Image (tube, rainbow, N blue to C red):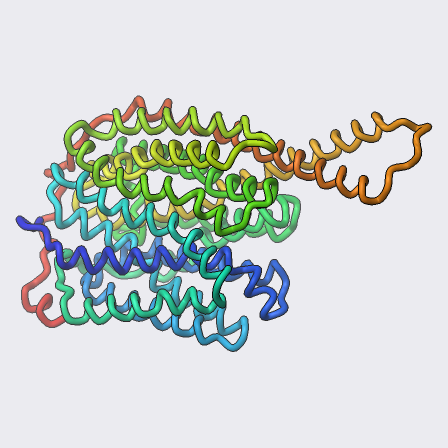
Length: 504
């Protein structure tokens, strides 16, 4: 543990993680433009997001090995080099295949950023100051994905989609150069070996689950590609977990779940992630599809909430250091439950201002939950287990995010379909059989109104289910207790030899 935290090192890692996270959310709004330019299908262009997520899902579980085996300097420079190369490749892409390859290379670099930064923070700061440190870390985790849609919406409305990558590129290059000249090693190393069978099983398990659940939202649960990949992923996961439990040096240590507060923090994080995605997915759908508001203004609607979450993250970190995670989690989840329920009351006339305020207050509640709960769980792990804890948390966020997306979209689609059929039947029954048949224009208007009302019913019903899910997290939050790392389990030999640090 460092007596004085290496703020210069942390600043470099912060900027690198922020740039890579911002890039991840920029591409979504640009997909229609890319689809039209390369004349490809929606399913094909979606691979720019799905493929990126798959690479993350495959590499993040292996991050525990990389963080223990290689110095933070070597790891960050390698990751940032890959990310920069992928960004350049995507910006210059003459074909969709090259663009997809660029995104995959980007993902291989960005996958390590979050686990590496979190591990450095846990190593550099004492337990009593971790809340404040992880609060600032929350700026990266919250602000970058939230700013992305707004920035992307503006760029797409005024410039070519390649501008998204050209905007990111100079920041990536400068961060890489800064790291090469200024980044120092602070994380301890261990002589660990990569089990190739575990890497294959991990790739099959998390890759299959992520692809299956993310595809279910588009193709439906009955599609063979969905249930086949989820089944393969589930079998791979069971085999992977059993193998890790038998190994002396596992790639991903599942025995960390013997620590009850870490296990509880994982459970709360999974439930909150699934509920949280309702707002991130359903709100833009309501604004753009039901109300016809532009993507840029849809992004603007989410910006105050994102800024508030960013402002509150360091403040909540300080409150965590002083009061612990329990009071923050209960308060934050309670706000989430109330505001999510209020989203079930949306109508075709709900004002933009009302929606903005509701989304902002919901974001305020969310800001009190994720980082304090996650940090409290990590605090119970011995330092040697930190890389495994960060890898596990990030992997679960990826998987629960995919599950949450598929789950909410499925619920919305089923409800919208049944509601549309009921509304159409009601409209048919109310028509006077003796009256002159309506004009095509009237039929079209009526069909559009039914479509919007059905989609609105699907969205509000999904928010209701999301409210019930958030209540589960609220119940779990009452079992949180403040913990400290088990000092007796601290590793005796994890220090990096001075000579090795100087030469890497």
